[in-house]
Amino acid sequence: RAHWVAGSASWSARVGVGSEWADMTREVMYYLVLTANIGTLLDLYGVEKGLEHYRSTNELNFEHYKYYLQKEVFSSLPDTISLPTLREYESRIDEVCWLVCKKHYLHREHIVFNDSCVYKLFRIFCLLADLVPESSQVFQVLLAAPEVGNVAAQLVASLGLEWDAPDFDALSSAIRAFRFSTFLAVLESKYSGSGMVEQEGLEEAVQDMYQTFLHDVIKKPTELTYYKNQDEKELCGSIALNTMCWVDSCQSSPKDKVQRFVLNTNDRSFELAAPDHRRVQSRLQWLSALQTAISHSGGSNGYQRGQVLRRRQQRVAELSRITEENRRRSSQIQDMELTKAQLQQEKMEEKRLQELEDMKMKLEKLLEEETQAKRDEEIVRNLQARVLREEWEKRDELEKLQEEQRVLLDMEREKRIEFEWKQREKELHLQEWGQLGLMGTNEEFLNEVLALFWKTEIKAQRSTLVRSSMSSEFEKYTREKQTLTVTPEGDMQ
Image (cartoon, rainbow, N blue to C red; front, side):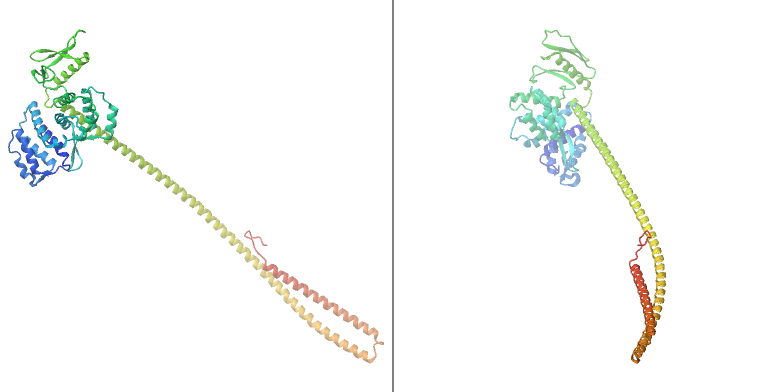
């Protein structure tokens, strides 16, 4: 229970200093004054003196101060403090913390709630909020959006207005967690009736929420108090509640304007009536509320604190579930991306392998073509060599024939020269005979000589024609040799 008071005190102090010191580091003198006031409220004096030498530094952060409160201040409280006493301590500490921070919240542009209502909303905020770390040195006290919606819905219901859930869902989607200043501004601007509700109605609605959250939704879980009127100023008495109590419903006639039920305790039974136009519904709500109060009367913590803790645990569990779901989804996405990358890698490898196969086939085809080309070239070379051999043989034969012709020509030339000499001699002889006057007597002889001359001339002309024909054949062979080519298939052209 001492830890409960310590948490409440440090919580409220954090809300108070949060708007001024986001890094939560303050001079020791500030904490000395705050600790002295807390110690005075708890009848503990001198507890602030240890801060002067605590951690041997002139500055402390929030975590250090919270640890000091738990170990040096609230550890002096007995462990058997009753629940009402703990609530009283908490209320006093909240008042001290409110004195520290109220100047930041009471001066606003558009004031709807008075100072008393703002203080009560401050205590409700401190009860429901969470301490959210932003770093090792920075913390924020923030109220989750569902808790803000719960408070706003109860405020709207108490004012007799209609709760617009979709509108708040749209707001909460933009703001996940609320600071106290934001929380107060939202309540004043959207859920306080927009100036249509009188101040007394606002005070009554805030007081109803204050009792619901600070004194539990079933008013007080350990006792049922009753007053003379709804102002709750004159207390008529109280009924102690414990786990041995129970409630029963009573039969009510249609003429009754109230709904009756019986509360049974160890000492006596109390018949109670709930005036309400909703009749049966109101009675059932009273029965449910009393039964809930009885079931929680034996606990050390209040009903609302238990509900807040339960909702907080649910939010943590939901956050863990969402985190795990996101982690699992992220893992699945990573696995899918990894699988996709592997498939792409396999496709690329297959494509690369196919390209290599195609390149291999292409190279093999080129190699085969090159081999075939080499074989064809070898065939061509062999054909050329054979043709050259044949040409050389023909050339040798022609050269030999040419040599024979040359010899024959030389012989013919010699014979021609010899014939010319002989002819000239004969002509000389004929001239000499002509001079001697023998032309008439030797006419027959002269004819013989001329016939022989013509025979010799015809032979010489025939020899000249043979030589000319052989020369033409040799020149034709030379030209054919110069234009001779061989195709790759081995055919000569």
